Image 1 (cartoon, each protein chain N blue to C red):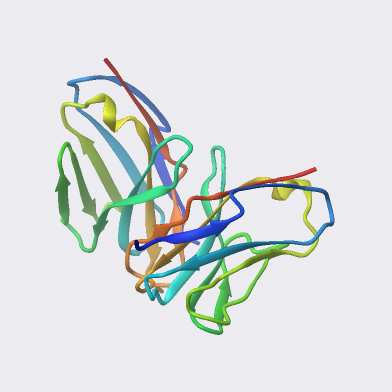
Image 2 (cartoon, one colour):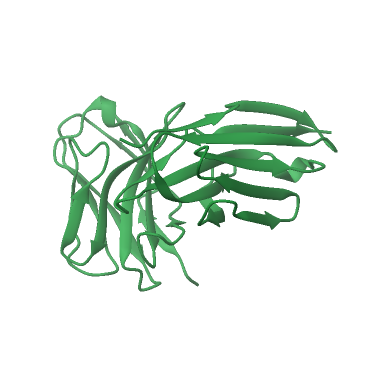
Length: 112
Length: 111
């Protein structure tokens, strides 16, 4: 089944404790991106990747890192999480930048 | 910087009625997308609108794009309860590098 898989689905952590949210897609998509969803703000792009080893900042990249070493994986790294990063995170992929996105099921992160 | 605004943000309507959700964007955009999100779920793609005057229809939903007015609409015909969800529009910058989402319209269809 074609899908974007994120893990974990739920995560509660404390301020400053490094964490990684994994994202993997099995559709051979070139483009991958990360979004955060907050009430009243829609989805805001954190980082995106046009292809392997090519990443760029979205609208809200501060406090996040990404890497794209393989085509299928695009992990999101929070080196030192803070409470304002409490949010619902979505990974998405598409054939190209202009194709519709396929979204993962989301990761609900709480930072205390 | 591309900004995308939707209205209304909340919409409660009766089954059988028609309504339109509006999506305005601030600068030139190549493409306009509509997504649906059910409560507690992920987003799924509904429509991609590629050019001025584009119209796409799927069931009771019809989306259109007016690039001169920088406006897209999502029209709901004879609403049914199953259409209750949050609908997002998203615009792609002409440079092709960033996709910006609107705030979402939470639609509730009441029996």
